[in-house]
Length: 212
Image 1 (cartoon, rainbow, N blue to C red):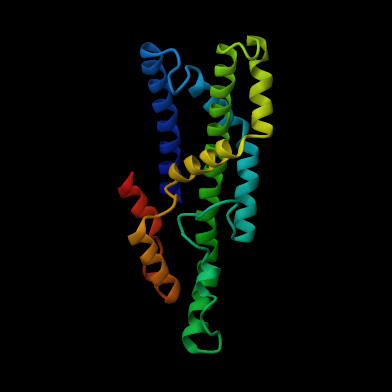
Image 2: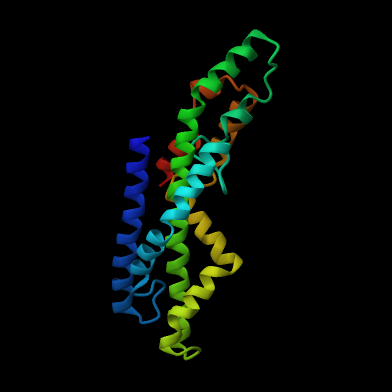
């Protein structure tokens, strides 16, 4: 769990640094660069503004075993992996017993994923909202003093494309984004043979790490 949290924190910090550098370089070359100067600060503000919500989401995930959106590093919840087993057989009883004993560990990992997904989402949505508002200011659509109000309005009701982009980014930064074809095949195989959950507990995350 500690290693997972350190990894997620590192990815989140690196994304802020990358955005800050990209905005400076882009600003020197083109005043309508893809990334606005000030986005990195907005991203940090969004992350900290979402801390309470992130812990709340993590607690809910730990209690229910369900992610708020998308997958965790476990790929699918352990309980779902056990559904196809017959509890009346020796194998079924053994697997269910093992899954119950391991549940706190696996749910802790899922909760950690959810924590950082919510933090990353909050940071990304605020950075994207700031970008849109800054362009509106530059184009004369709103006065400079209306920047903050527009950012707040967008965060309260983000466009679908912006919301989905922030969701995707939060998945990428926690290595839980959609897997490739080979990974999907391995996940399918593992779902057909639930006992493999204990032999190969992680598939999606290592694949995404190598793809990054």
